[in-house]
Length: 416
Image 1 (tube, rainbow, N blue to C red):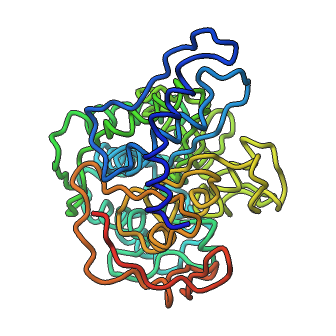
Image 2: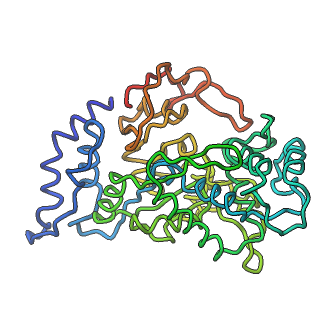
Image 3: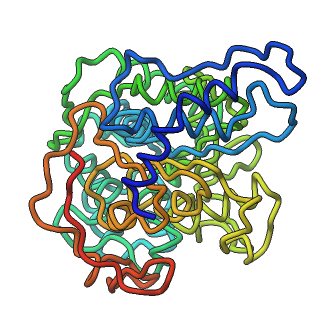
């Protein structure tokens, strides 16, 4: 069934379904009034109507059941505009909070010799454990920022190699690995200060790290705040699955009503209450080999929500062990968003693999919404789904295939 036909059927049935789900109980007694999406919040096209009907039909408000359908959301650029993990990384650099490592090459098992040499040249070889003066040493700040943001040295050479491209983004991991020497309490304090700074900054603010201009503001999306709270009020188990440091997003999530124990992210390992510079593994893989990225997000969901351990945690599970709704904005999210059984919500940031799935819409359950604040412009050229739409574990690109095994045709960008 095509997406538009599904949406049309949903819209036609919406009012009746809302009445039956929220009007009275099965015994004729009045059921509680079920929270609905705020009519003042603007969504693209008929997305709000589709979400409203999904909530009425799948949620448990007014129903005699203990089951809680699962709704999973990415964090950065899905629930907020801009990136809270990066905002904290920038704050650490601008406040001299990263500590000199004993050996730069040991900060990631995937760091290339060229990257290690570049870091030593830019940042020196001060006493290990002392603060790096990245607020004043622009060369050091620039090198760390280039590698942590883009996975390349300032000179443009690859900073990482030898990793599984569907289970790890080593630059994201490295931002967390550089927390070595700090305590969880300190990181919570740093994230709290970074959050306050970025929420107070006017929209569009830029800041300079070293000599590089980067974003200096973050905002919660009002539409997503409303969606999360409406889902919760209708009996959904709402959780966050992020490729940022878990302790950082735990600072941000309570404003949405999502408690810290419902946040899944990159977990920095500790020894005697101090971060070691390593991150937790998943699916039988040890430290530093996988993060909450692509297949790694599915693995973390299966392990931490459904208690599925070992290599099978990387496998798609039966429908009763998958989210009903999943939402994301990036190729980082493509695996767990595609796993959703009833609705896949995509915020359009022009990320090719995710958008190829969303526009192809093989099960008629994909919703696409532009970014709620400063959305991306129309992508003039089609997404190259049929040639390079899929990223392999080795980092190569090949044609993307759909659930039935056929190649997904190139897709036009129509929701922006």
